[in-house]
Length: 164
Image (tube, rainbow, N blue to C red):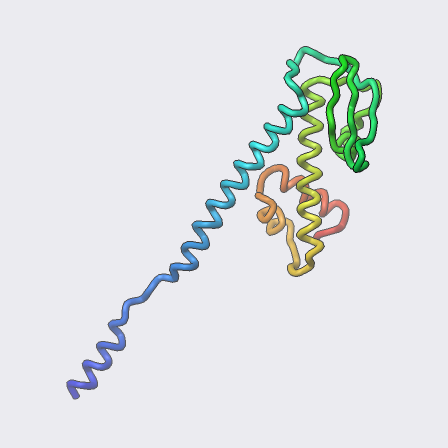
């Protein structure tokens, strides 16, 4: 009788181990999510600085001419002050930038924001194209980073009928 009691005590005495892998994965996901948000913010700031090209808010000029760059997906905007800016054609069209239009820091910010939105939309379409998962608005927005840019991309996809 004593042996069977010892065996049952030994069986129930085993320590319960926490799933280390799941805890590590959750922690890694949090770190990656924060890093992605930080990288997106830096990229937007860098794009704005590049588009503005050291202009102040008060210095305004206008677009003198537009020429497509070799790949056709980008435009070179020639400004009246002699400088030029290379921008995404789709983003420039989305903010209705054209010859004779004004160019200042606000327009440069709009252009940078439109380019960032185009990238987010393209990333979302790539995820949808894989077709391995049924995406909802919440899961897709979370996968894209969960920020305002991601929510705008998801809203655009939903408005066009790509997701429910």
